[in-house]
Image 1 (spheres, rainbow, N blue to C red):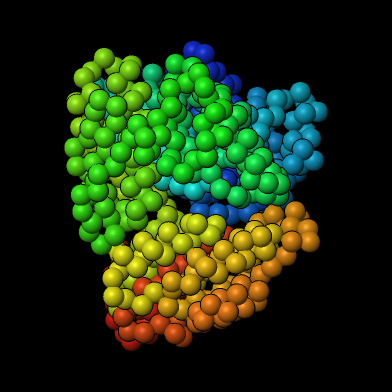
Image 2 (image 1 turned 90 degrees about the vertical axis):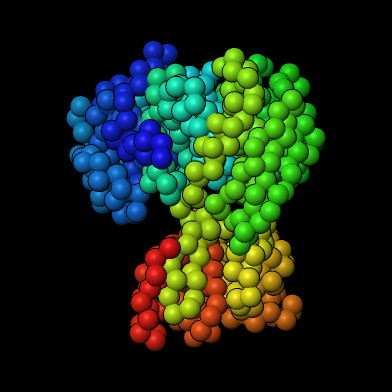
Length: 497
């Protein structure tokens, strides 16, 4: 196995960035967030002294503490700001009225949002961005693996990354990378933050209605993605998913664009429990067969987009013949084992296979259910779904019901109100969604809070079944109670997966 890819980020070699400099002492606000924590990991690996603060504990916060960084937890006060701070990096959830932000500005200390820091982590000539309504987290790590395979073959520097989800194989969401290596970043469209980036290469997986609280319409979303494509360097490469609207492509007339189904073609070669084997063909090149370790046809498309960008850019910049690059990229991507909270196997107990996925949009719910049915053929599928935001539930009520109807039984928990202050009059929750499912003759019930929802899920599980836990909120915290209950239900021992 590639020893370079398994090195912990805290032990990665320092990478000098002559044209991208940060001060020595950086303070993080919202240190338990995926983006800000990744910035901290990368800067710490490059030699910066990192301090941080968060109001509430989280899995990512605990992981940051494992790096022996001085972090604080609790209410924010002006005294929490270290006196020697030279730069404050804050998450979007930390407002300008935060006491530490106010104190930093009073002292003349620069305060930057995560979105402003992200493009400064690597030179634009080596910066790669992955955007899209769905799949960008997985596609970002697939891109990193493909580039890592190429770098290993060529003896090139380790690529860096900052992604919104934890790579299961690497056990981190951020890698500093080596000096001169490519840098892969997940580019979030929410609040148009991805328009801060000026990448050399980019992927757009797909474009659908979402985040309508800040966009208002699909037309505005498409325009934002077109602007994102337009920011890619003229000597770079953009790779588009099969269903990306043509209006997005028109945003980058001066850059080379490859589209799946046009310049790029996928040959499906087989399937094993929902995980596909395929080959990708591009302009003048083709990969060897690749067996994915993650299920779902949508992951074939994610992988194809990642491979195409890695191969296309490497072929241009390395001078190595395409066949060798294709083989190296394929070997790297074949090592990808998935992302935390993306079709993540939680375990198997009492004849029940338990899977968790971050799906919180109707399309994501639908394709995840399809993948579960293929991965566990012949087993009844029982779903516990936690809707994410009342406004999203209201806007996509019928679409959610249609996406869930393939399940044998559905438990709907209370809505996770991540941004309840923006929901306004658009309000729907578990009762409304259960009613929509009943109209489709789906066995569905309202679960209540997460603890009670788990009890409802357990009460209907047969001896052999698949339990799929869906949602982007705190539903992931039901893992241990659910598995413990299954383990003790009939005295059988849980088998980790």
